Image 1 (cartoon, rainbow, N blue to C red):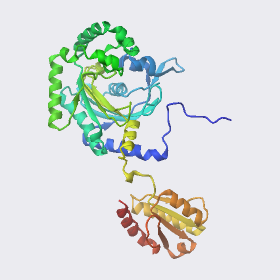
Image 2: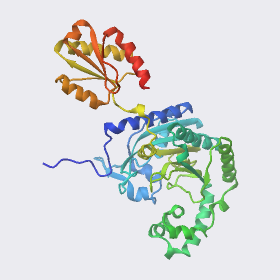
Image 3: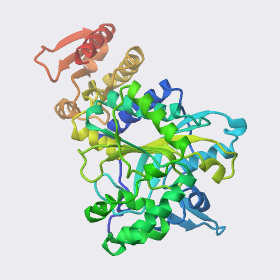
Length: 429
């Protein structure tokens, strides 16, 4: 009988990799907590209408990439392709935005898009998202960007990522620019790449970030969005740049950065790297002041970002920035032989876990000879083996064997063991 395989583009997270994910998630959680952001969780399934109304029916995501199906009630449901719309829905449904409340929220979890799987791009991928509601001024834009900059510093990758920054103005300003851009591109329609030709009617601003060199060459002569900005958006952008300059955050102004979702306005940004090949965007976001009202709430300004967990993990590995101390290897491996020894070892192991909370201790289970157990102890990566047989159990002692250092094995009383292990742990750290 053939083995059942996972769905293409939906990968397992194996124990060897989970420690890195936990390290990344805990680092992000720590940074966000220091800025006053609280975690929110929402379902992976939503009504399809949520994404059609928020992302836009003529975007690639809604047209080609969503996992959508009918349930037994004939309702159309979709596996969430992104988190912002879900977060807004959750806030509105639970009254978090009533009375113009300010909310600073973050979330993490899987998202789903039907795309061609490749390195750094999966059909089930994971994001960490941050959303701030209720503040219209540019200082909160600067804050969410500063959060990412601080996170890169903590992860040790700050010098390997670059901030791309732009403003796309108000909806009215973008509409005026859209008209001018389409008029220009129609004159060069036959020379555009196929994707850009398709987007002419549905989403022409997305042509600005086309990957086609020939299309980019045409765009060099296109009208500039900056020339169509309203005064409020222009002032907002200047304030943001002033705040980032004051905080020492460098950036590149990229007038062709527009982001792929319809709900963005004013500030848009991306953090990119040249260490991951084609999939170089590790974090992206911007302001979306109209989305809350678009989804049925009272008008509320908002700004946020999302970062890809898989890509950040790849980047940490590529740059050799994975801390050695996050390894899942035990510090101590307990080798046990004999029925009386097993009982004594179980008792002693639990005492050690209570007395030394930071200790990673693996107790051998399943029996076996001393020789086979020592092989497993060595393979585990533990620094120390604790050895207890029936004789040691009767005498209340344990043999301590160093597996990685040339230190002579010793026998000590059980009550002396915590002090020895604490000293050894300090040496390991």
